[in-house]
Image (cartoon, rainbow, N blue to C red; front, side, top):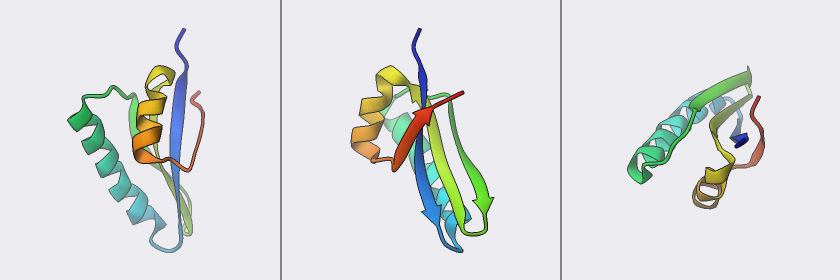
Length: 78
């Protein structure tokens, strides 16, 4: 069974929400141009000063995304 991984980009500061939302646009564009599969691209807001953009992908595709897009961190998607 293939595991799903969540690749995460952290954004901090008063513009973190807008920056994370904008980053999701670029994640979707990249996946479409490269014709790569993903499960979800979204944003999570933790506070006015911290938001994340994330993409959930199959473990087999992780290196392609990681090497091109340089996420700040990753974790197993639940």
